[in-house]
Length: 113
Length: 112
Image (cartoon, rainbow over all chains, first blue to last red; front, side, top):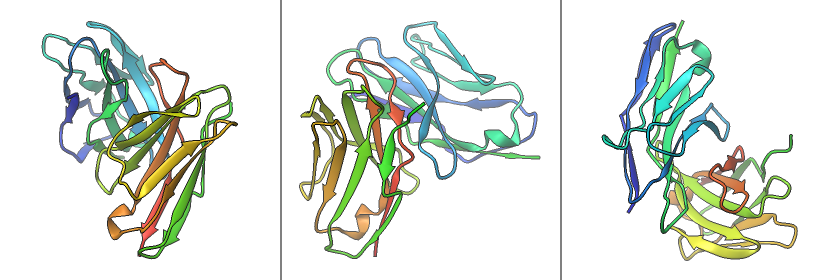
């Protein structure tokens, strides 16, 4: 079945550092890929998405490129802020069979001033 | 804009008790999903409804049941609660076939 693998956290960075959170997936066909963010005490919020190969999703300075050849959708940000501290979830939604989104384990990001 | 509303936000129960969680989707969204997120775990899909009918079933225990009502709100009923049921329960809604789900803030269930 479909699956998503994220790098283990927590990721601890200083403000203005470069961020990469790795995400790889296993799915049949051409899934849509997502990054969701969860701030403390809140629900998951969509951060960005990409629906086909080579698409780049971007929002709030975060970017991720849909790489079909490496089945990856790594999240990047050039300069993190303390307010980016949250848990980030990579997710996919399959193109055939089940349309239920599958989530990764989540990666906690802690940004220090 | 209206979001997905879940209630209660926090719930404390004893073992073997029952609990009911409610979810009010975004207006005009016809599909509701329930997820369970244990401590440090990824959200696990439980069940979904489309137009008041169950559409997909995930890892929902037999002790749990859910339904979607005529006004599209959904309720998750949990019986014979166990310590392992302690988790954050998320509801999400979408339009059928839409790629993006909108999540509620979650209901945190603690079983003592």
